[in-house]
Length: 261
Image 1 (cartoon, helix red, strand yellow):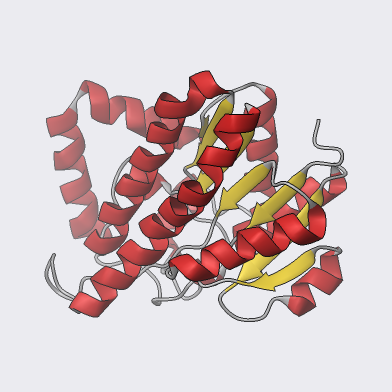
Image 2 (cartoon, rainbow, N blue to C red; image 1 turned 180 degrees about the vertical axis):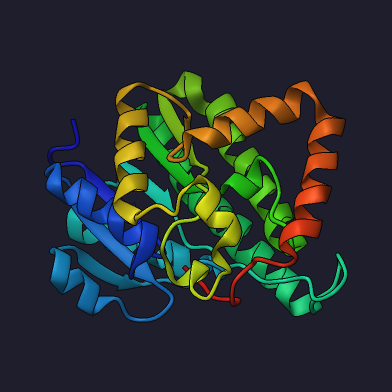
């Protein structure tokens, strides 16, 4: 299914991005990985082409895409995986303006910049797949980090917009919504909450993405319980909010160190 396909992935030095890269490589795809700092070592280790891309800067995203197209050919699958998390401090709305803006620029605009470049090409040729790594927080909430929750909700909505606006043009979108996965973003995170539903490995998320693509499913639920929580939120929103409030009192602030994926 992926033999010979050109796949470009952001935020792929480690974690989910690397796991997805390894999955596509195993399936015979030509894979380009990028990170805001060098990812040459990862590229050599897994056999992928490596690039530098700061997804918060539109010109950097454009260069990544154009370089991949020049080196490997037209991009068939773009995985917008780069992400960043930060905490509120004591109060919701806390944190610096710069931190909030950084979350928006990386978690949302990184996908917008890529789609702005790729969609006209994909619509013209009638195919393409855009994958966004959102989070369970994009469907539910991340206690202790309103900036993460807000921007991941926006990321989910943008993925939905791609599917709604361009599905008829032959373009597919996938939205990955995991809970906790071992990565730089979750390093140092308190384990009490994550252990409840399982702390997955990046390979688990990559395998879930592959399965969702094969089944032609939009959402990627590597943690199946997230789907159940999502349905509960839609069915009983007040009960859901009350439950999350109780969870907040129980676990405090579980979000980890502010790091990029």
